[in-house]
Image (cartoon, rainbow, N blue to C red; front, top):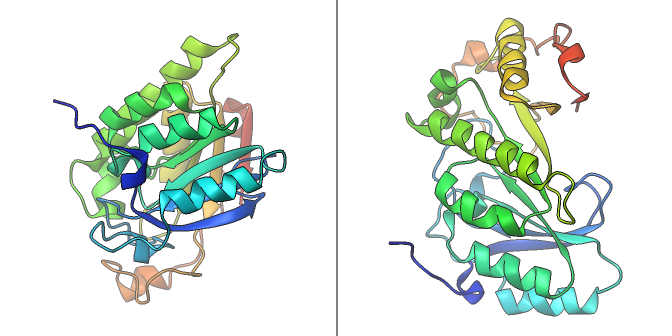
Length: 246
């Protein structure tokens, strides 16, 4: 049985009123939802992991902000944390669309079932794919996480194909954060080939940055923490329509 929820039940950690970096080429408000089931060692927003932490912003605060910024913003991005942890995400997206805004979503694909319910209301997805499925626990600390994430990738690519040529297409970007404790250059090339084989044509490789991350990094040895950054010089660039390094 699918639990229903109202948008006002969203547990919201914070809101960025105006952002140009959360959705390519779009001016957005970004809503950060509290809670994530995973414990990625390189997480740059660890305060948002605990789903029991009380939110700092109400949904009414968000809708008031959006009403004030009609005509100024292109859309609203739901980020986190992991937005698909919360059942109130879908009604919140529906309300955002009713207000006339486009909807973006940042997700790691932890909950493919809720993602499937949300995708019809989404215009753009930034999907984190952290590793090949068997290596996910190294990053997330959770054994079954790889299967969930790659199932979510199938859902995003399938929805994009179904909606191609419609008046409501789905755009996306697959993103991978790289740290030598999780992947080496050969492993990153393998991941890129696996993504291309799955049908991904837009990939962003993001270098780990210490800003906001826990110190010391959990589950990372001192040797791995001090390892040289990846060279990123052997990526399968020719297999992607767009491959960017950040």
